[in-house]
Image (cartoon, rainbow, N blue to C red; front, side, top):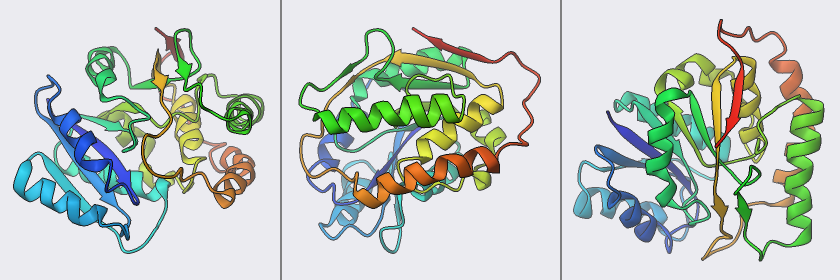
Length: 252
């Protein structure tokens, strides 16, 4: 079985070598990394190429995109390429250590019985970095409770989670061409469609650490897009037909 970790990057030159080293020393057979870089001005793309060609040939892959094209399309591009490379499981995560690679073995152990495993901040045992500001906590609460739960009816407690392990077959069933959100709300759209398709979803608790180096990508335009797109998501996917399986969102 091949597992490919997809990491979108924009100005992550200081984080990328360290996160790559930590990922590729995990005791996980056939684990690879795919970096999707949006023409980072700090040289992240060049560093990714060096990692792929000199330090980890055959284990690190790089996609260079011309300009800052957004989180959602970065993941869609990365997921598609990962499946072309033969991935049986695809993991999405950030480059800034807010998602610890140490959870990946547990995700892969659990994915055998599920379609997607979510690294969740909001199930029992999950924690947020105590350095989070009150407004950031409030935004996250609003997104998960008001946008996702009330407006969309999503049962996943951490609908905005960016740390997930997907089965290849789940991504194929979603039909990535139907996903159009390109910012923070991308995660909500993926969660909504997953539940509409009756995916078997497991949330496992994680500690979400604030980024160690660099600046957050959560800009005001990203937040505004997220707020406006929730109703569009509900309209766009209202006719998605569930597969014949029992709907299941569980926590561990």
